Image (cartoon, rainbow over the protein chains, first blue to last red):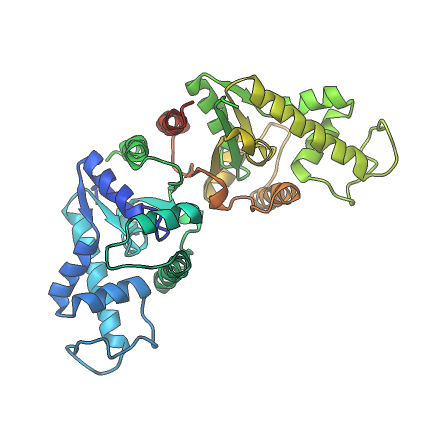
Length: 208
Length: 208
């Protein structure tokens, strides 16, 4: 239980993933994000894309069963989704046992609460989130600003719903986090260089 | 407009004032809190205690006129309260013009937005706020835990109402702040030592 676990929750487009990645580099610890999904997929034998969707959206009876893959069992639509969450949570715990790390998303702050993680919430104002997303669109993506705003709202809502399956504490509600940081206007390198000592300071005080 | 202005908003009992005071020390800048009230009182000729109350509670038609002092004019109950807010806001601006500083409370983040302050929100979980308040009670104060919880809720509600007079952005809503920090479990010295470089880093990036 003595490892330094940093969990990152984030508004879509705020750069939370970049903060997490850089923070892991600066602190010299492991970084987990979509890799988790891959690993879960390999364990459970479920399709990776399906799992990525479940872990972003949470369990829902409305989830289309025709997602493009057959499941190991077909006794109902909820079962494989519960399976995914269960596998993912087990995996998160095994990663936390393994060593110091940064974990982005997956409600790791809730799943790993017994490991006393440092929980960071990353957000930004809408204009800078839109700008960030537009800059990062691939050559095949041509989402308009309005499309992006809708997508943002939807992704954040899905995250919120996923969280609600695991805990009473609401997504984005400050009480669940040690620190909430607004990335608007920050150079990401400068921000993470400044944040890393806050995280280290916290763990040092906890004797980690 | 080039000064480094740090504003601190805080949940009652979270240690926001202490964070502000230490942050001012570490950064070597001026610190303003209740001193503002005193100065406003001296300017406007209104009673200091009355002003302290108005600035915490905001303007309200229900405010008791029998507060214990006569006013410069008696054309209605709202006038002196508007006067207080106006004087206080003017004073905040003159402090911001004067030099680098930390200002706790008084909605300085809103009043001074043109000065591009760094806005910090300080919070904590209820158990640690209660503990903090109990430890800091004077020998004449004997508030029970329940009394304290009620007082906490009331003070925070009053702050929220005061803010609503000045801006649409809600008190405690993360979007209004650059950083929201949970003091629960932190040694205040360690916390502020870790936070100061985040604030300096922000200003350095803004060329301040």
